[in-house]
Image 1: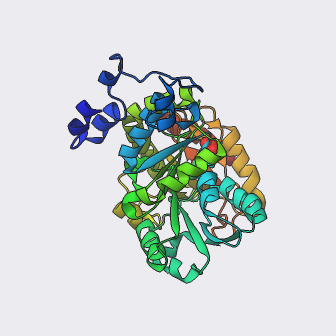
Image 2: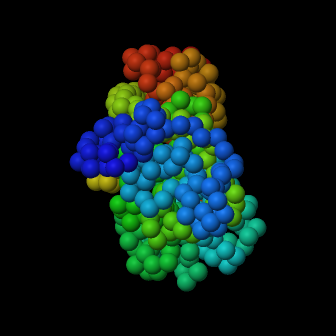
Image 3: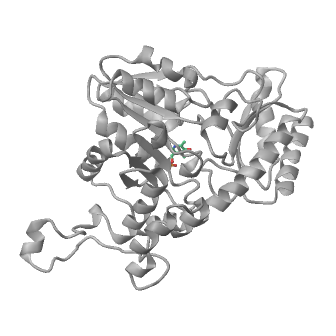
Length: 398
Ligand SMILES: *Cc1c(COP(=O)(O)O)cnc(C)c1O
């Protein structure tokens, strides 16, 4: 790492992405790190074995491959340590299990990624954790929801599917001001550390589905958890207790994905904004939910805190009555051919889904029509637009 460290200090983000995490001169000179597959690590003698001096001791405790990825993520996040987990959902559940005990109270944003709520309603409730959902616009008023047993405040911005922004800095400052032992977590999957760095805004633990943009090719599942110095040890200990670790090929491929993530995100951002602006002026669209649009309620927060927008947003298709929601939404989606119908965004290809918000308590479904979430991929934007036009034509033909 010595050769690169100083070199990258003042470098631009794409330069850093091209060189972070691994120094070719530390190995045999090959540009990329080796894929180390391993359970057993050998020690030269009993003295080394018993002293705890050796860097690598067992496959679950890190390898040169996983270390390269973790080093890159720590630089991007500004974190003290990063865990690699088998999915983005595990990147939420492992920190929750680390901190929440029977009798604790957890505040969860209502616009949360839906499987996170399912975990809260099942596993955490069974454990006797009290769960309370709050409005994403709460800001510093989070104080009024904090109780003596509040242990964790979970944020996600923009919110899943409905894209609500949150004043992350105000929430973290207020929660820590009330009780410094409260853990503030953030699911930062949408922005990636390139467009928002949670720890710089007072968040303790930043969670990601690396499945999405870091992978970039819809072929890997991985979660990452990056923590500040105060919380790194507890997380790392829990991870050891649970026996979780990152797989070697997946870790290698996520690091490979990071190399191009900056330029991919720029392209996603530009095309998504072009499509969002076009949809906003479309007569069959009631509303476009994209934080980079000045018309969006959370736009000012996005502009103040975020460095960019990725390629996922939603829009509300116009409908005259509730009974038209489902047929119109389905006609639109079924007429698309370039867009795949699929959930896990962040890859190179465009995707669309009809959003189900039936588990929401506060941030409920739009009244004007069905909500459709789009991931704008790396295809040419004119082709993407043409495909969406086919969707509108099918709705008009109903
Ligand atoms: C996809 C996603 C996850 C979960 O990622 P998986 O790897 O699919 O488990 C978590 N949070 C957000 C916001 C996501 O979009």
